[in-house]
Length: 300
Image 1: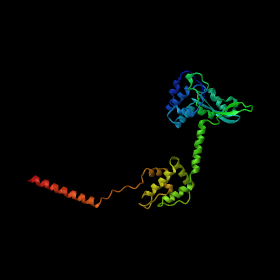
Image 2: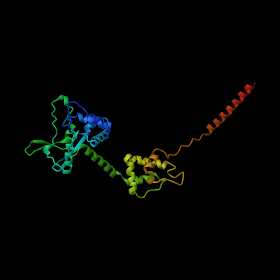
Image 3: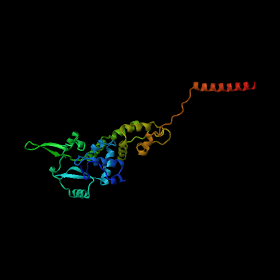
């Protein structure tokens, strides 16, 4: 990462502090980045480790800084292929112009132009300003052997961390969708909700409704939802002529109401046993007898 403003101390311009476009977390991330030395390797994971806000929050803060032009991300290319991102804090107008030229003209960079910044820090007061975490080394350096037997290091960061994270999320989402067995869900519904009309075909509309439900719930939650519907006298049609069906159940608004128990059977008051009723009768008679005695004693 390049920082256009540097010094021995972290001095932040008032314009940044007073910029009401930035959230508090974005300003915090800016101050952290501003404290890093020239050549510090930009890792979102490294930034997250120094905050307790979580990855999503830090990603949002970085996005704010980019949108407000406090942080610039330049895409680099090596031999016509995407290589890595170069990050610039406090970019100048020339940086933005250069970035636009790179995006429009797809300026290429030779492999020899990209390298890992020198981490041989002899100043002990600045040991934490350069990334020396060995766990990061494998992500950016690939040890190769040249034809004459000499070892060389090439910068290998084909994709930035945030791009990789986005792709992983897409892969997880795609894998999750592929694993959904709609026919099995159809079978479970017909087996559990015996009081409701059976479904014979899993239409595209029904599949979409299942996908929406499973974004925030699991297959176990779906099975519990079916059980909850069947147990409800109202939804199962045991109270009136109307009954719910598969499409009605998976309507998002209806689903929430079902899960919150709005359609659960209301518990009836427990019927008293014969002994309890007799005891109440005796207590009433005893109370009346005691009341009569008190009246007689008061008249004597």
